[in-house]
Amino acid sequence: MEYSSFKDIVKDYQVVFFDAYGVLKNSAGLIPGIEGTFKYLEEHNIDYYILTNDASRGPKSLAQYYINEGLTSVTHDKIISSGMLATEYLRLKVKHGTVAYLGTVESAHYLEQSGLKTLPIHELNLRDVSNVNALVFMDDEGFDWNHDITKIVNLLRNRNIPSIVANTDKSYPVSDKEVGIAIGGIANMVEDITGRKFIKFGKPDAQMFIFAYEHCQKAIEVGRESILMVGDTLFTDIMGGNKFGIDTALVLTGNTLPENASDRIKQFGIIPDYICDSAAIE
Image 1 (spheres, helix red, strand yellow):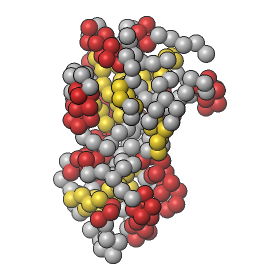
Image 2 (spheres, rainbow, N blue to C red):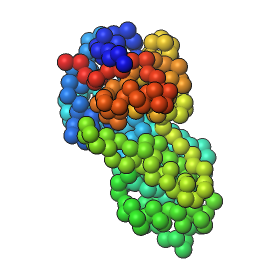
Image 3 (cartoon, rainbow, N blue to C red):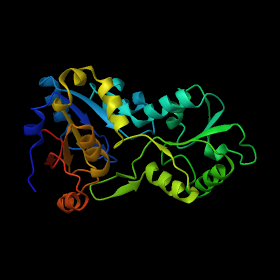
Image 4 (cartoon, rainbow, N blue to C red):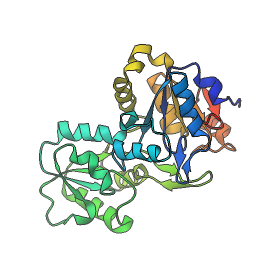
């Protein structure tokens, strides 16, 4: 398995799509050297966007993290979140009533933009669900896992409503050796228990990449051959980029560990164009 320097790769592209967790940051903070990456991109007029399945907070709040870390150029318009797609679906398909959600109060930002009433699962009364017209899985925090997930199962037994997953990630890196369970993994479990088919937004779905492509004027101008997708997960970032027809770079600072990267690529047949130790440019 041949490794490449991220600096040597990125110079040949005009637009870069970055995943967030495991590529730019983890629970400990920014990946070491990432500040140099953004400096390099700006100096060489390479446009960039952050494509994230993180629907825990709105784009302004997500961007504020990077600004607080000194990356002042990462403004809210640089953030493309799967939560934005969930908002669009609700606006078009759910015209009235209440949207129940699993997640934090901050994650309800996306739902409130649809103009619908929102209700966290822990406040839901299962004896009064006639006005609940949609359910959205937003974030893996902000609820009692046992009590509230059980409540969701029983809600779906009583109401035939669309169930929307705003983050398809099954896990996310919390350190260089550990991952946490993401809301996509919880949603898959509930989907299996209830026998329902959920509506899912986020990588690797092509809709996420189409949304990002149309959001970036420079991407449209230069075409897909000049765009690079950088991610740490084969099944979301790399497969999604491959399906959309853009080049992909797998970095080994998140979900895919250096010691098993080669085996996983061979096992699943999801092949990145490049493999890098990190997206950092120091």
